[in-house]
Length: 194
Ligand code: AMP
Image (tube, rainbow, N blue to C red; front, side, top):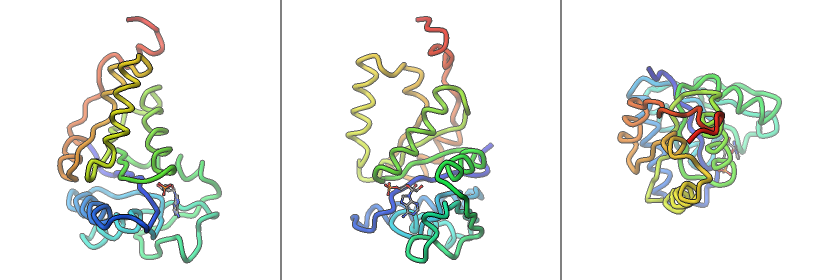
């Protein structure tokens, strides 16, 4: 049962307001389910919006910030709890340990890296927690097409393609994560059997 979710998302402020609105909506939807929101503790862009959405819906939000980013212009200072750690690796490990599920919202390099890292950890069996993409305004369509291409060309096994859910609307994505079942045959990459 999911009790907490980690959200990765863009820190840029130079974005269309539709992305900020979707981040606030999914933050509020997480809070309404009584799930604790874990995230990178940023106050800018979608990071600030997702936290504010959850806090305004009376949710609990825990941020984990490397001391490199712990500055007045980057951090969110009204969280339920703010943890400051020594490195990005510690931050990502803490988020990965604490959350029961992971979601990426639109973002840039940081978000894409975090999404693929947690997905890769599911692929190699380091965890079996649900992973999702919030495909606001079809932002991730080119990425989904790239992943389909990688599967068609044999670089991604079919069962690994099923390791993440995606949806355009927050509630649909949260439902998909709540109903997630690990696909069968995940150990095939180890045995190399067809
Ligand atoms: P990006 O998608 O490149 O904006 O990177 C966002 C992701 O990288 C977040 O999920 C954070 O973990 C991390 N990150 C990048 N920039 C910041 C920032 N200014 N404040 C906090 N975290 C950040």
